[in-house]
Image 1 (tube, one colour):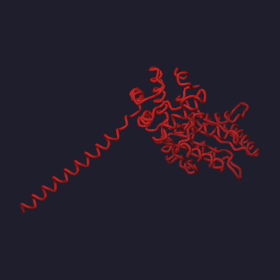
Image 2 (tube, helix red, strand yellow; image 1 turned 45 degrees about the horizontal axis):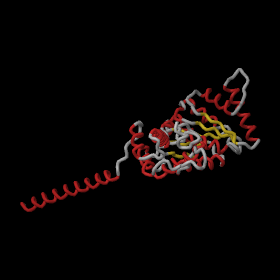
Image 3 (cartoon, rainbow, N blue to C red; image 1 turned 30 degrees about the vertical axis):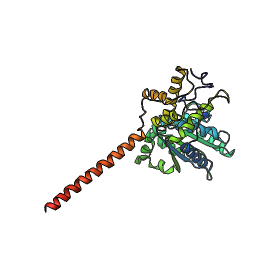
Image 4 (cartoon, rainbow, N blue to C red; image 1 turned 30 degrees about the horizontal axis):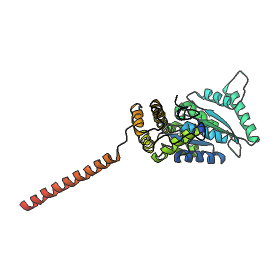
Length: 310
């Protein structure tokens, strides 16, 4: 709708995960670095836990994109399935063909042979499982058994779990504690720091730009900070607010997004909270101090009177 108005090739704030828009803020870059170093070191089981909307899927796709020339990779976006279905999804991702009739033993042998061939050719196999908090308990044990596939020197399969905080709760269950012990490295992915949001907005605009002449400073400085406050740095909420702001500016034939646009967008967006103005916050602290001082002074006066009467 507004792409031509702002000289853009595509919508810059789509909430569909796209590694082309990956923004390496401190948390995302730390998580990616951990994954790359651990996988290249041969670690077998890794975990990323992040809040809703903080970019786990984009991070996963950026990881797969980075590894595509050095590893065989597989991606399972929805692991809410039984053990056999998960195994079938894995062999499909790896391009393993198993002639019917199928049974678990035959499929496991075919997978093992495939992994051995890749290992002999010097290729590592990395499997990323997104939304891992949705894995049923009976399927988690299958993952542990898959992590047993190894030679004397190396793991045949490296697994990366990415999920919401409920994943940590699930892994603490006593019946699957053996899997938790196999996770050698983990990282938490949280919201962006507020001061990184303006750069994030400019990055996405520049990535979607039609040409180098496209203006990437569409958001005024106070508008960008206002988006940071309303979204609390959650990338998905930043995208939703920014998209609505561009629509509002386009509707008014404006080429700049201001604070008014942000407030209108926030009022129309569930899940955002109005940030507390600094002056109101300070006023509250100041009033609290004055109230405390007044109470202390009154008590001291009463104590003095009481002492004098005695």
